[in-house]
Image (cartoon, rainbow, N blue to C red):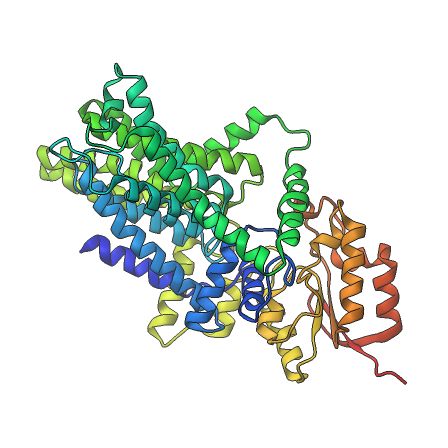
Length: 534
């Protein structure tokens, strides 16, 4: 009951999260999908397609609002929590392991706040847990094969395949898990691996591997067929396999792979919660008390975590949300460690129980996952809670909580309001990195390029600019919004902001000078209106 209340409280907090920059991008691409368009071809971004589909589903189910995707996110988290608890009960002797796991996962998720949640990793983590819980890793208590093992391996593969459409490295989870029974056959002298040994009435390791791989490929193949049927396969290939590798390469220039790997592991282990290093240390301390089955489960979880961290290091950006899919798995290891400690405290004395109950909240306060936003996690939580109790979050409070770095939610809203008040349904063009304005203004974009990173990046720049100008010529915008002070060297490879980039983009500069005049200015934005033809 206590765990359910804890989780429910933070799920309500998550429901109040507004869009950050990425969420605004996903929402605009989802709007294009719902209207019959396709990612990459009709609304440009370079994230894998799965996240756009989820945002489109939320839009269809709950309407064009910011809480729809948060509700879908909370549904995923709640379902994941049920799976964590049930799986931990079936595998681990300490019965509180799953409750500690979901509590940690939800706490870190809430601390990541609006910017680093409702991301591909946020949903990919839940799908990974669904895959782990579906996979028939262990024989039944009487040593027999679980019911319909091949179907379960296939379904586990489907979950991992769907996760891969959100973050590619997650797709390999099913194949990694099914290799454990193969290792058990090859290494019969390793006791804890024998927990994965397939019973004689099982389907056999190779058939299980085939089923898992087939399941993984299925959602990916359906996605490819969808793009092919819509005539957008070439666009997807160009973005995901031509543009995106250049983006990833930016972070690898002049870097030592071992240094990056060290940074990725240490950041995961110590950077987001003091509970993680302590819980893992407790698990190692009590490792001698674990059964062969529990050690095998811990190995499987650790391998999946390693797979996730390898993907984080490969990207070499180390954004907080890149670790998002890893926290539910981490929670299982940490939860097992703390559950073992709890069992020892219960056996010892009430004083130990009291120390445990008091110590956990204090340890939580030692390190928070929240980064780069105004106010502390406690202050932001209190603001949201008080606002909800008094009837809802005022727009002014929402904008303060949704402002970070160069993103000013209030300024975005003011520009969107100006465009809404201008009336009409003609398209507009945002020359900047705030596509959420399209969503809030309820105005269509005049180009597939809903933000201007492709035209500002140091690679494929000329091609992207030519396509942009072709779009603007075919579909002239009524308004052009120009942003200042939005330089993003980790994304574009240079320190030039949107306003400055116009100087070396003569075609766009000439269009603006010839056909547009200033109409509105606010914060870092200048809004230009088309001059009527004489």
